[in-house]
Length: 90
Image (cartoon, rainbow, N blue to C red; front, top):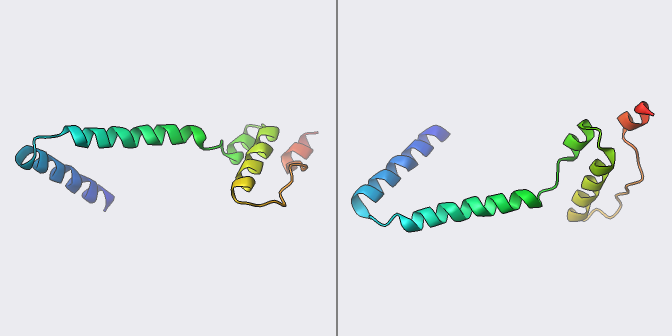
């Protein structure tokens, strides 16, 4: 279903810019601005705690969980714990 919608959007855009409007610049500016906003937001998203845990970066995983807890306004979160695999490795 998504492919049908995506394809129909492409066909609509092709017909519109071929027959109705010759001004493609604003469409390109809109697409570029969305791409730029997405690229900037990628740097603001914290690394996944699950990835950090699997890479055995336990300290960074706890910091990432603390950051997420702060955003979710969970004040009862504490960084003073150890992951189960971290304890088993000791």
